[in-house]
Length: 552
Image (tube, rainbow, N blue to C red; front, top):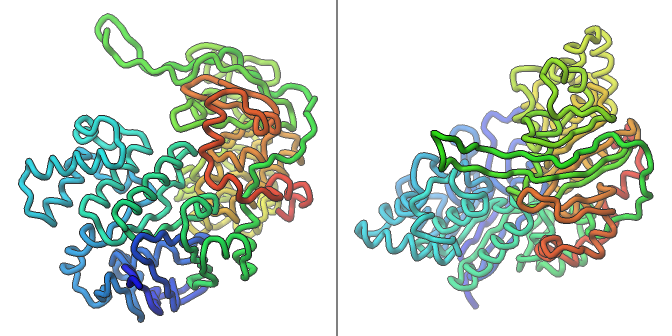
């Protein structure tokens, strides 16, 4: 019987000067990865998934985390006793890692090919010509188009999926025994995600590489895992084969995680007949402009003739791949960017061409919740200051604004006494609740959610979706919800608009679009969604119907 390529036994990583709720980041963690096997590690944020992978790579932050006890063996070779120089010889050559966000993992001022070649320069004796040939070979193996051009491009010149392929090429260029993938598909749209998952499976089978795949997406788990390890608060609570974990989980925590996965089957929703809050008519946005001095300037039509309407109390979802124009539409409606042409009617008033001064009274009517609340909240201001800033700027007395903020904190499920805390003192899900409270403080008629749950754990995601659905009903809001997650769209949206390359190619009631998609592109999106047969049970939108707003 083959020996494991990676074996972790009784590993404990201590937190230096811990003042939190636990003294160890992970405790007594034991798992193994066999050659040619994909082991998925799942759990909420703070469960210890990434700390485990960082310990294997000897990338634990110095002075903050340290291995207290336990063993990590790579092909039988103990890693915990190696010096930093010895680990540098191991990383990349025998064990490699693909990170969640390639744009932050890749050097923005070096060409992609040079970054892959650097691994070869450190670990091999190949000359420049040999390194170039190997770089192009591995770029072809990960199905990057035009490897010569891609090798000479900088990271910002590639799409998200292409950057992730470069990261995978860099990790696999020396045929390591173990590949660690830390949430490599979380921020990708479904078609790109499907391509990356297929690529990892293909590479693993071709090279017999053992893969430790960290994720919170059970759709991904059902698609690629051989075995599953479930972590909670630094400990492994359950592990076993994919079939055993997904079909018959033993632990309540595992059942909760699986139960939080939104279903691909939309719930039955009654058609909304309320007055129209938002209507766009032939909305266009073009970036770049050719002129006499720049006849060859690049012109990009980000949005072309987009027309739709949202009624009060209704949620319209926009789905599509990265670059389809979803976020550009949202930013035009919020007038964060100026549309090139077309109408944007808010309660019957066209705001598309309004000056900033004329637009001011309408600013409060349209509020937006962004994907990353940590970047959208000012880290130097308390959450209370962030919530009251808008109402105070629009003339609400300070005392009344504070009272409103306290009410809203309770509404979104947080303690009103936490208004004096700063964003970094909250979890990701709590920060998103604060961002929602800040948007509601302006008493809007239209709420825009731009991928507001894509970076959250599945359990936290379910809670935030319930909250959004609950506040929509309580305040009778029109909601524009942008997402690349079809499961989320199925559960929270009354109607769906599918965008491709700046054009709405299909629109209709969510149930109709999901059951009988008419456009070829819509059918391609659905076929690319991971875990087609998994999680088709009660979804987040349905759960919200049974919950009072304050309990969400």
